[in-house]
Image (cartoon, rainbow, N blue to C red; front, side, top):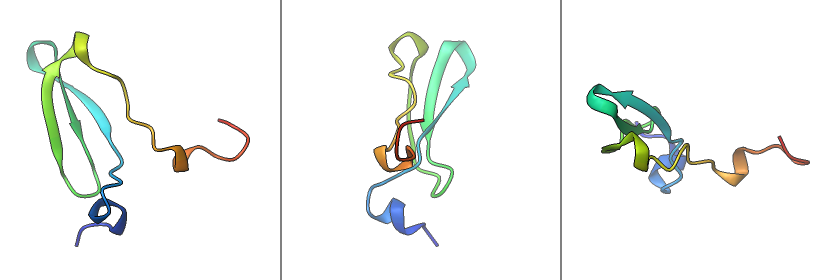
Length: 57
């Protein structure tokens, strides 16, 4: 069963480097995958503002 946050489009994105300098972005909760994109164009991890504790990190 897919996590509720994924069904709402609130995936927990993680970047993974793959062969030939490419990066794939996946959600470990539901398995959704985006990419691959060249590592130079990788925008970095997608941070959900709700994952940041109050008062900063």
